[in-house]
Length: 467
Ligand code: NAD
Image (cartoon, rainbow, N blue to C red; front, side):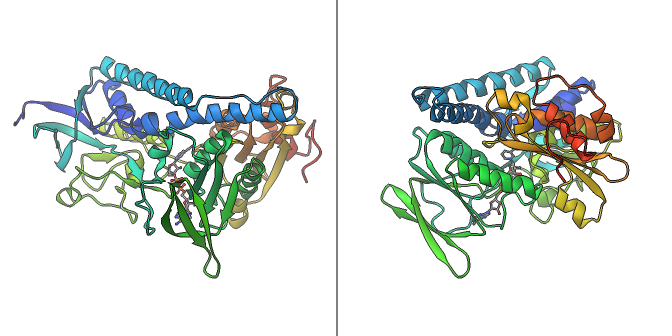
């Protein structure tokens, strides 16, 4: 079918956070918009990523909390829970959010084409039935999917990717996780709290090497305290079938070990979804890792084609995709905008949570930037004590001379929510002096942020000097 009459201002390929938000933004700018999605709106984030994992992590945190209260004799018996109910609650939350996005997209009069779209030349998108839709600008937001490691035996049915790990009908008795990155640590927290014997095998010498080293070490210790086994600096070499499970062989160059588990989760990174995008016919440049190369204006090497979200590599976070979609739409509707990642928040919903923004201490040292730091423990905070959540700390790094906040790193209860005042401060180029002069509500965990600002000036009220 050749439907050359259908012309649009903006065509968006992919309906995840990058794609659906680009479509909505373009419609809000008064443009005629078409959106192609082969599965469900919301993409990985809503369907098999952020949202369902966070549902499971909320319940895992509850189970973890009940277990601690039981150990402390506050509750008499450990809570029994229904994994089946938890799974169906997760599905309900996902459905609610996906239908919410569908309603919003429809409300903006965006044409949605369900099915696999192809892009072979600038200005045209081919629909699932071969129909052609013309568009002045195309935004590619096709996302990414888990990569399976090139390890012999990784094709065993007991080796799961993150989507498979979300949909387990039963809690595995034992789980080996290959990769101590964000996905690996979140699933370790879920299944560890639910009762699995969890082992994380990480190739690098530290978990989360790009995070502040105090933070990554503290998280490792906190997870080990919860019974999760973590081995760093080890490489998985082979997976072999073993009864109903698998044996994993891992080690360093000189030492080889094995571990057997019911299930194996491969969480070693993701790869771009490029099927349907004819890279060579378009002359589309890819980066060194095979992702679509896009500049800070989200322009690709092909005029009129923009890219946003995971398919461009980079941060691979839903909030990065939202920002990149905003940039792409602004630039294809006459604006001139660049995406800035300087204050991009990083949140890991592990148990305990980890959240950060800006420079890590080791990065300031490497760059010879003069800094001061303030570190305050959750234990010093009244709300943390009454909530019986004393684990963790908040660390602020500020410029030695001006006191401007350069980085904020935290681990502990609600850390991912606590990060937002830090983001506001950094975006406003606030100094620790300014933060220390503000009145924060008492008793709240947010006081930790003010307290850490005061600690940078050796004026912490409720904790000992950190230096
Ligand atoms: P990742 O790159 O963050 O971590 C993968 C880890 O696997 C690395 O540390 C790597 O060293 C290790 N690894 C690779 N091969 C190995 C091997 N053979 N043996 C042992 N270790 C090995 O990838 P991910 O955790 O899969 O996450 C993918 C993307 O999704 C990331 O960009 C992440 O930020 C994003 N994500 C973010 C969130 C969040 O923000 N809360 C949640 C989920 C996913």
